[in-house]
Length: 397
Ligand code: SF4
Image (tube, rainbow, N blue to C red):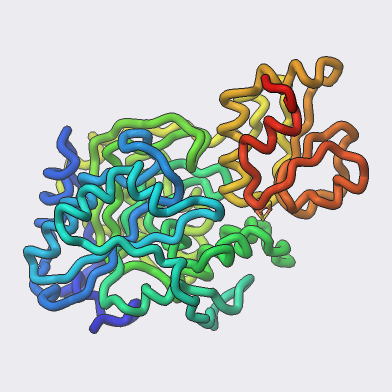
């Protein structure tokens, strides 16, 4: 009914993008009120895919996964408007989606509403060309995406170690099939372009894979070491917009940053895929900026977070990064004890490392070659905490 890059049922007039922000202690009510600002008359009979952020198992309220009450409100509003609604996700590599759906509270609200929960990794992918891509030529997209008329991206407001923030545009990476997501982290630099390849790749992706609507969950977001190892940040806001770039730009402002400082949004905005110019976006209510709560930035230098530990991170995937950061949050002291004569202790993750100091702890299959060079190596793609523990403390911590 609505091609993903064609007609958008939420856009009625020809005027510029509109974004609606609601605030209050009840996430369900906030979401309903924000969606109530939209014209939903075009949704009768439409098949809607809700794409939340359930990339990893995490309980509600931790700022990692989309609040189930926000999802519940979206289902209720769209069903009321005459649509058929399903929820779909392709999680980060190594995550059991059924378990993630359960733990984050979505299974319960979906069952109560007879709303299908789709594991989008189950079916074979569909190859989608990216004719305007600068670093990618095509994507392996989950086949389910093509079964729906309308795609709604429902991210959590988070800072991100690699991409500055992660919002509705970046959340669409969870529509890429299985391990193909990882390829976006493995691209070589683009000659003459100082942007990280991952950010150019997300902008490329948004030329062919962007949602019809963004519902950004700012009930509890994440600051600092996002997307999974940061601190939960309560804002109690919901941001809704049919131009996902405009919605992301408003969310950035509420987080105390801006789209221009978010490379994938800046690149895509410059290419004209959406509007990031705040002067061109109509935002309601007029006092929305009163709800701004600046988020701590992801640290440039992880030594501030983990003194005496130097993380050598080159183009790692979120999965590798999450494992390491969550591991360090729990076991940094034990790691320092393991290397008593070293200051700092070096730990490497990611791909394309040339020079790695002796005694570096190398984590993840991308560093397999370092094993041959005699370095302490933990296998896995992504690696798991238990393997790191086994390597360092075979007899227990
Ligand atoms: S080892 Fe880590 S960085 Fe390398 S591909 Fe796997 S998850 Fe990504």
